Length: 288
Image (cartoon, rainbow, N blue to C red; front, side):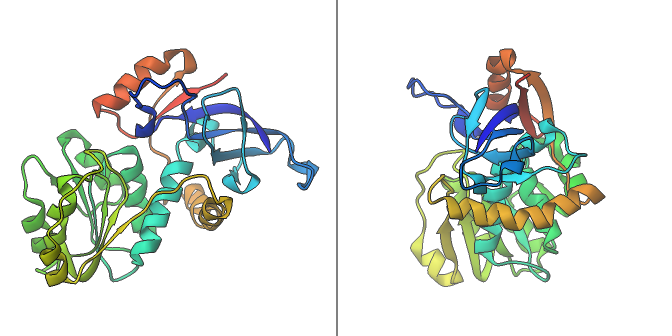
């Protein structure tokens, strides 16, 4: 289908400094203006949010399974901030296989994607939800969104704190958004037989892991990354999320976390703010 974009959201992947020319963007919200021959023509005019490459454009061509229909009460700006984080964090939590009775450690939880992970973990009945951040001023936001314990990694030791709040057991699962040295650091904080899910690589994609530590703790290390093919992978995730998250949005049990909404003309300044690490949630560009 063809979507006229009304708002798009920034992701860390948009901070590409390789110098290669490309259209940035991965998530958007807007109106369907054309639909493929195999689709119901009544879809035209529907308000949707979704994920597609080169989303920072007036029009986006997207697979029909890569969008969700928006409730009337959800603004384009809020909706644009959700698809990438929702599908990534939901996929990671599904791989972790956790729910009521389990605990989770979410690193870099104050990132735009981590804030969604905290809320999704809470919706699954996970407790405690343990969140890490390097920004003291983001503690209150994390607590408001459902984090039971917030660890400032500049002031507190992750392993000892996690073990203390889980009575020595460690977290059932870890959702790591940092990569690099953090992967190895989370293994001793994971419960016997638990899982470490590598979701993001904010500090780099290369990591050294003590395989003996993995073996001693019987920890499973799993990495996730969701591209755009095959389309059914994202389609299945978004389909499940639509039935779970949209009702929670309506009742206030889940919320879009938007740092700021700025016009497309201010994209350079928005990217600078994203790179600074100071954003409190997603930065959204208004297209019209």
